[in-house]
Structure formats: structure tokens, C-alpha cells
Image (cartoon, rainbow, N blue to C red; front, side, top):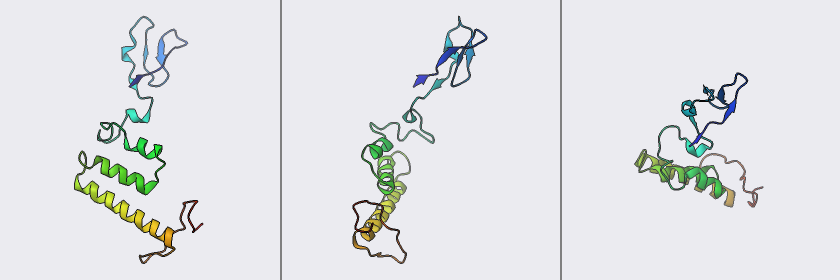
Length: 127
């Protein structure tokens, strides 16, 4: 966690550009609130990702994974620390959808009773 950025204000006091805290120039800036510099410093709605050696979104971004793959990684990563079997069922649901989309992409045929949009893979035959 990084602390805010202090600067001298026109009134001679010190102030923070990020959290609006201010203090006398001779005081310790302990009143300045901690401010995260990166998204990984904060998690909204729990700590189930922050406790990981590698956060799922970092893994997803580093490997260029798409929406379906990313959600599979997310739910499989957190299932023990958040929603248990429900998260594994969500991961399976995304995997089923990925298989469905990829099957249409590779064969040009939809196994379901709905139309699938063209594949976004630039190497796909269906471009």
C-alpha cells in the first residue's frame, strides 16, 4: 500500500493531492490516508483473490485469455474460499459455453437450437 502524495499548499500547509488530507508543515503526515496505487492493492467484496500468489486477472491478462476462459480461471481459483461447489458449477457452465462456441467456430454447425455469431478468432475459417 502506498501513501498519498503530499505537496505544499498555497496557504503554507501540506496537503495530499489524492485524499484531500492536510496538515501543518511541522506535523507528521500520519493523517494522510493510505492510497492504493494499483488495482491489485484493493479488492471489492472480499479477499479471496488477494490471498493468491497470482491474482486470476493477472494470469488471464498475461496469457491473453478471453471472456469464457477468464471466467473459468476465476471460478476455479476461488471455489474453496468463496462459494464452494456453486463456483465449480459456474466454471463448468462457462466451459460448456466455450465448447459450444468453439464447436460452432470449428465446424460451422450449431448443436443447439440457436444461432451463434461468427467467431472472433482471426485464424478461424468463419471469418
